[in-house]
Length: 315
Image (cartoon, rainbow, N blue to C red; front, side, top):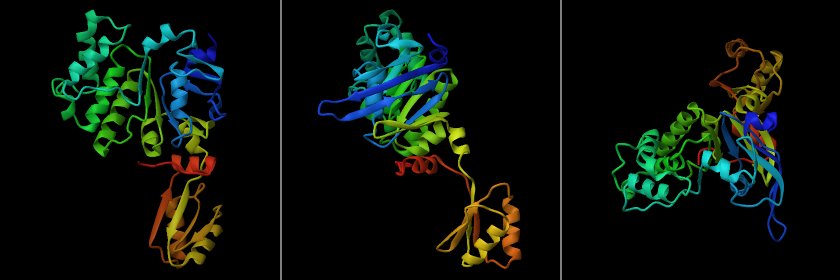
């Protein structure tokens, strides 16, 4: 086991999937997911995220390349590693007329690696972990969208997991359900489990994740800690004013870079200047200031700059 593999829950080396007809879904993927992280795997629909997950879990064979899960080379280590990995890929099918607990019992019974003697204890722990103990006896069809997604995550947590893989866990949820799943992911990570979250919702990833990788047309175009990616972008100041030319002159006079004007506004990179000093200089120059905002970079800014296209910000 290499040092890199030991420090990372997922490592891929040139992972590639080419389908019949020549379509390349994943192209030479080199990915490193640190242990203990909440890793956001970003990209628009069709960028190769789900195909990558299916290869990682041994559901689809790669055309070429290799990968490690939890420090073990795959696919040879599938039988030893997968019991330590929980996964939610497109969601398991639950019976609407059965309770949440009864559904988990059926799900657990279908797992050949699960010990039936410990089923009740493990199901109880999984329900408690996702906050569904009080609703364990309620029929699935009466669950809210957020409760249904939490039950699906409980199914992935029926055994002790070192890695949890979630494919679009907040897709289609209302705001309350999204908050529930986001809080749950953070709690699971706080217990030491690495969480790998595939998503196309930038705002969710920004609030939930510590690290991120972004895919575009099958290729990885950025990877690293979120703080590091955002730190490479400049903080800007935006002034709302009818005196755009005069405001731009003041911003330039203060030594701010990247000054530009638009309809009813002027903006520049803030640099080391204090916003209050910028405001005072504008007022002293007689500029009519209707509003002043400090704009910190977001994931959307970073990835639009990297890829030249946007993603869904909030669904």
